[in-house]
Length: 177
Image (cartoon, rainbow, N blue to C red; front, top):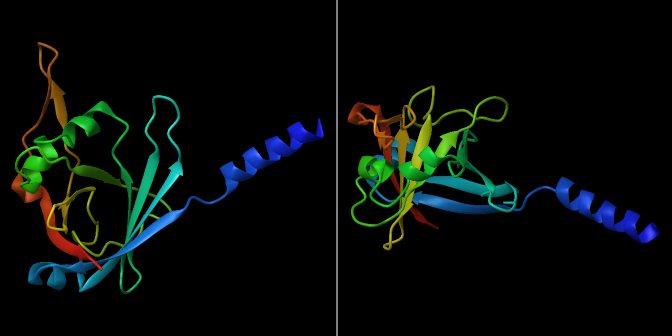
């Protein structure tokens, strides 16, 4: 009995303990990025809920400006449309200008408490961002003013709606420090 209480306590403690946070510093890789967001930002990633059978984990990312402003995002890895948007050669890759068979990552801006204070894409911040890390080590971040939308055709096929270039609010390039 005591052993089962101890095991239950350890399981509950593991669930309640904070998720490990991976932090990396990103340095602007071009003059346009430096002008838009400064020379450096910090990226903090954490997995807050491990994936259970058949489910992907919930992954959060926070981008922190040198002056303390933050933008918070959650990885788009749970809906079929999100997975379709970020597949190799998919809509997000097309928006980002990523050729070939390179996969991209879609991140949705989080809302509410802790959502942050935008430092790119205007005072409202991006609705979503796309990220891609190339073989050359350059990390591209593209800010999107609206989510990528899909429609179901009469034959049941799902297609992404065209995305206007006017809805891209930032094209940033960084290198890891």
